[in-house]
Length: 103
Image (cartoon, rainbow, N blue to C red; front, side, top):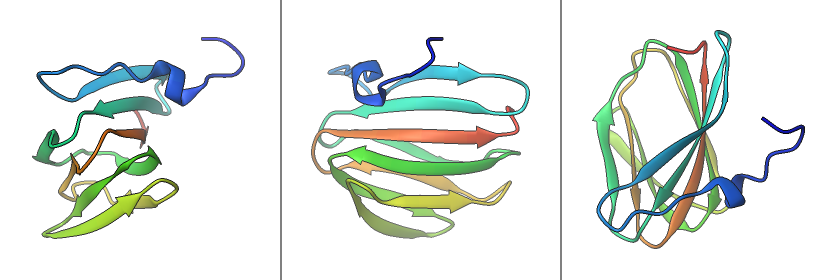
């Protein structure tokens, strides 16, 4: 890992599915860049860790529990351990996920 990571340069798009790229990983935390084409989605799931999602580019929605929240560039949402969350893109979207501690 270099000293400075450019999140947008780490985004790798896939025509078939959203793609996650780990850009930092330690026992204390993990950072993952997700790249979505329009219409792609990461379905509802839970984590034993705290999860923070930051919409770096684009527009879509984040699921928190049972409710969807519209997001666009600059929006941030946090999740408690065990809380259901998901992501879907309305247009090309890049999301930075911070997970602590690393699951």
